Image (cartoon, rainbow, N blue to C red; front, side):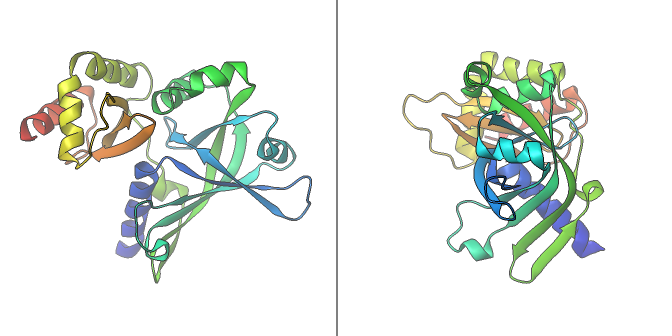
Length: 235
């Protein structure tokens, strides 16, 4: 049981630290063969994967015929890819119209706000059925939804308000969070907070997303404020 809990925790950490994966669908043009493509993602209020894909893309056509898909997330910045973490999220893709999920996605990928409306892109949620997590050689586990999914208590207006407040009034603190995390900020790039959840927050540096965890889980907006103030002071 302890090993499974550890695996679920590591799988969630990988899910939160990365923001893109390989989407596998069942090919319509080549029946019986899987079709892979790259897809950025974020999580919705329930912790499910949300992707934004073009209506005319091959993978969208595939999903319209068979909604069973997987998205494989691979740990970045490792010397040997076989020793890094991998998470294969197996689930059912469904087209959604969810304003909260959409605004959250835009926070992570601001450029998507324009092409969503002008280039026939649509949001899909991949509802988790089961996940396969590999933490390295010999560390292989199936992870069930109840072990991996965690709702975001701030998703919606509360999160949007916190993100906007930090970006408008606390730019210096955001820079300090990045520097404390060992990030080198490119000249002329202003980091911005992208999203907040109970375990940490994401910062957008140019078009790259980084994850900064809280020291301990938080449950209220007041807890988030205290955690951010403490981190800024420590920095």
